[in-house]
Structures are given as structure tokens and as C-alpha cells.
Image (cartoon, rainbow over all chains, first blue to last red; front, top):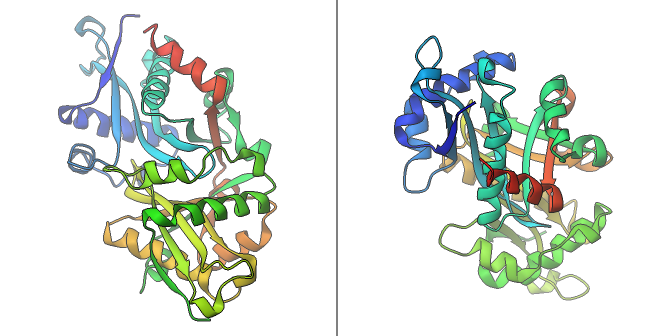
Length: 169
Length: 173
């Protein structure tokens, strides 16, 4: 299939916001999405952005029934390993269902890896849900490893009231 | 015990590097440490730093047996949740064994949370090893949830050859 991958710009935020909700629906977490198109514009395209994005686009003749040509995205940011140095974290990777199986997901992830290496990163990290077998199989087939299973890392989070309490001076 | 927590300066990188190694030894993975104070200086104190760091310091009269007064650190960076917005990831939290039990770890953690709050961060995230019960208990007591247990999240990584191979695929697009 004919597609292209390019850096996201601020005009893409409407489609990225749409696809963030689609991905949350797939992960059965729609009610958790609080970020809006406007938040993405402010947080991703200001002087010190919190994230970077890449989008996958198809030509007009392949657009979806709703008229979308932006049919996948990856959202990432730079992170740090105190053992390995510069790293890149891929927060989201998504391709609309009707465009899967065409190498678009792999192309997006490869682009993140390429950009990360160019920035001097030594790791690409992300998370996946244990029941999401198709995604896990996809990632493992690309040569990564599951450090929760193999080394025992657990992902921990503090938010809401617990975080407020911690943050009191 | 009298201690203070302050932002790290470039000159602290030798001490931070020392403590990174001590933490890796504690986690039974010292051979995984590939960077030293030079990388920390370059990556933490440039125009767009990859991380920020706080250190815990004790006065001279409480220095460690080897003579160190910088006895703990917290290394963190900003992340983004596409569901909730700006967040903080606590990469390392460490206090030298002889200084534990004095509230230094909690002090560092709270200070990171406070820094995050000022930047409107809505989450503080970290990872902990499953066998590390004292740390798991410490974080659970502060209200952290274990998302691997409750929601099934697994941490995945590409590095070394697998990362190179993946990046090489991008040239074919």
C-alpha cells in the first residue's frame, strides 16, 4: 500500500486527538482520555514540547469512508536511563484497523527508532497490556524484549490525591 | 538527622555517578551501567536536558565513613500521557544504606512530586523490581499503584542490535 510517514505538525492535532480516542477504545479505556486537541497543540508544539509525533498518511484515493488520510501515528519523547544514557520512549503507536497488516505500524516504529538513534539514544522503551496478544506478538517479532517478564520490572504510578499529598511542601 | 535536598549542579555528577553504581549493585545489575559522570554532565546540563536531578546532602559532621556528604539522589524527566497530559518519570531514587530510615528517601520523592506539581504534571511514574519488597512497600505506602499487577502493563525495550535493526528498516520506507 502506498503511504508516507512524516513529522507531525500542529494541524495534525485534530487527527491525532481522534486516533488517541480510537486507541483508548481499543485498550478499553475511553473514559480515561482527558487530553484534547488544544492540549496537544500547546503541549507538543510550544518552545519546550513534552512530546514529538509522526503521522502516517495515505493518498486521497485511499482515504477512509469518513474522509481521513491520516491513518496512523506514533507519539514519543526523550527519556533517560541512568545506566544506558539517552533513551526514547514511545507513548503511543496506532494504525486504524482498516490499514493494518500493510507495514505501517512497523514503519512508524522504525522511524521512532531511527530518530532516537540520530539523537544518540541507546534504548527505545514503551509498555503494552498483557492481554494485547497481537501487539505483544508484533513487538516481540521485531526483536525487543519484555523486561517485566524477563527482569521483573513493575510499572508504578502515583496520581490524584496520592500525588497531591506527596507534593505538599 | 539534619539533611537538605537541592537541585543537582554539574559538579555533583561524580557523586551521582558513584551512587548510580551503588544502586545498580543493590539491584544485582552492576554490569548494566554503561555511562559515567561525563554523560551525566553532557545530558543533564545542556540547553535541553534529558533529565533533572535532586541530591540529598548532609553536613560535614554527618559525612559517610568514606567522607561523602552527598548521600542520596532522585533522577527524573518529564513525560507525556496522551490520556492525561504532562507527567514525571522517576528514573532513580537512592539513599546510601547508612543514611536510610531518616526520611531522606521520602524527602526526595516528595520534592520530585512538588517539582512536577509546579509544571502541572498529573502523574508520577516509576518502575520497581518485583523482588524489591522494601521499595515496593515504600511506594505503596505513598499511594502508588502497581499497574503491572492491577492493569497488566508490561515494560518493553529495544536496545543494542535489535534497536539498530529496527532503525535500519526506516531507511526502506
